[in-house]
Image (cartoon, rainbow, N blue to C red):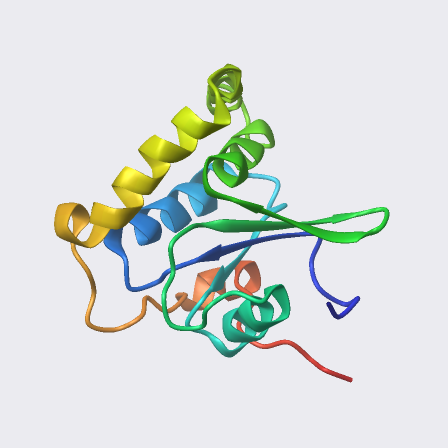
Length: 145
């Protein structure tokens, strides 16, 4: 991954209404601005998915990329969500108590919602684009130089 990337990147499906609601939630509650959002349909999102060896046309999970001492680590499904909650202010941080549940159970619930998200929450015909005021919080392109 290029070194110039932000420390915390959340990849999300911008055609999914649930995922767009999640991105609005992040923009509202991440007062410190530590998370940068990246639409999987954007050029940056496609490049990051390719680098992770993930499909470029089907999106099954939110992905959190976090820079550590040895590079980036990717988190998927419930672990990504709980790691994000852990870095948000109270009361959202308290949701990390869900880590006490077995990962298999957490991901079973996550997968059930993910499989049915378009049916339950709807799907957009076009990608949600960041408003001018949100541009600094979105990663749309990655410089390769």
